[in-house]
Amino acid sequence: MSPEQAHLRFGPVEFCWYPQTLLESARHSTKQRSLWLTLFLVAAIPRILGAFFLPNAFGDAYVYIRDIGEMSTKMRAGTFAITDLYGFWLPLYQFLSALVNVFIGNGFYAGKVVSAGFGVGVCLLIYGITLQVTAHRTAALLAFLVIALNPLHIFYSVSAMTDVPHAFFLLASLYFCLKERWVLAAVFAALAGLTRMESWMFIALIPLIQFFRERHISIAAVAILAIPPIFWLYVSWKATGNWRACFEARREYHDWLFAANPTLAHFSLPHILRDGSPLPGWSSSPWSGARAFRKMCARSSRRSFSFLPLWA
Image (cartoon, rainbow, N blue to C red; front, side, top):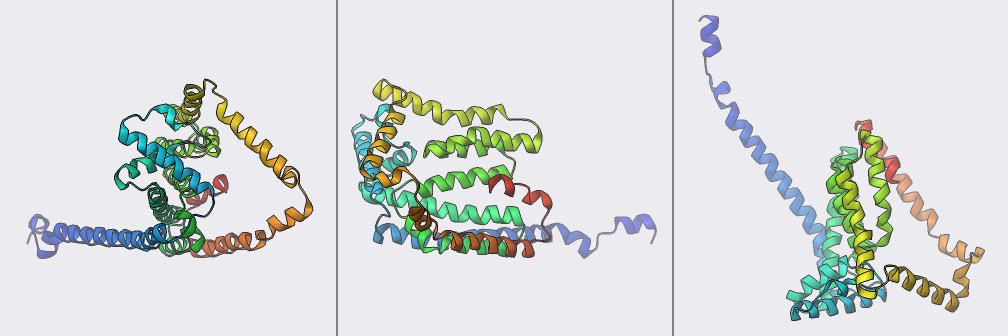
């Protein structure tokens, strides 16, 4: 047989490589879907059950529930206006819960179910971020289980408050920063900025991270990040005629709080010792976890870890 004939010969191995590759790809996709479904169920079952059987963590939850009920009532009546978003807290969580409550008809459970859904998302993001950072599936699964089965996280996930939804938006922003998809990172940071005011600092932080990574800044990302404070100042002005109304209300609240509790207005050694007592236990866990991760993930690239100091 000539070399040309040998080159043109199609044997069983050469002929079947394409279907075999497709079969392997299909098997891999099926395994991935099964894994994500399992992770979803492990995180979702205790949180959905907890939304119906566990109480709220703090009394603030009942103020959120009241706001959810008022918003959803106006939505059903067709009288909802942008000024109805104004309040002591930023409005995104209450607004989303009110949309759900239009169909559920129970503001108490609507707020808890929405928060529980975000709690499930937090667990899945923890898995995805850990896998991205460490390139180690076992480490990612351990990190997922630490959060998904953590009683404290389950308890907060089923409380009608902004803590867990806010954490979801922050983790989603971090995930897309790790992927260097800056516009999507800015979108989720903006959603966090419509949930809690602390996230307004991302207006500077995300462009700074992008500049360190790529030596340029996305104008679109900066514009998206600027939306939450501008929108909230506009809502405050529209609702009260004063764009600083929210800040003044917060100042009045803190003045009242310090007047009613003078010990909160200054530092004292007994309070510092009492509040800092859990710190050794809390700090030892990340330290031990970091050592374990470093040993397990020695093969991961240096670039994967380069974000850790920026987000520590």
